[in-house]
Length: 185
Image (spheres, one colour):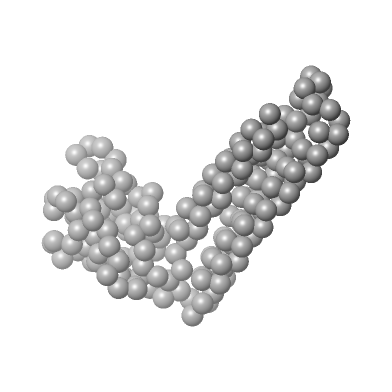
């Protein structure tokens, strides 16, 4: 029974780390990656459609994104969405493809992004601790219903803490890695 609880705990914490990794992909570090445009959607025949479903998005160079829509009539909409986004990017439309130059980050912007990385990591750690608390409550309920002994409860809480500590360390490592990537010149 406790093994199932540990497995569920690990699964939920892995999802939290996966979300953290996805959030970090959206924070640009001065390099062009198609994931920068994740979350942007354009009006395409009356429906909001994600850019990744409307076009091939590639990064042929370190500071250039190339957006080639499946339907050339969507070029204008894609360009408008990128301009309106808070990414600070300026698309260049040549009638067939859209080129987006990724400007080099200023030192000030790097510091802002570093703070964002730390904030995102802290939010992930709070989520991990909330999962730990819920799991500990579940173990306490098992103890109350006399499904496990007091000793088993203490061992389970110790094991839950070890698992949580491991995932918190992984979140901190991910933050450190992303911060180094951002502060690199």
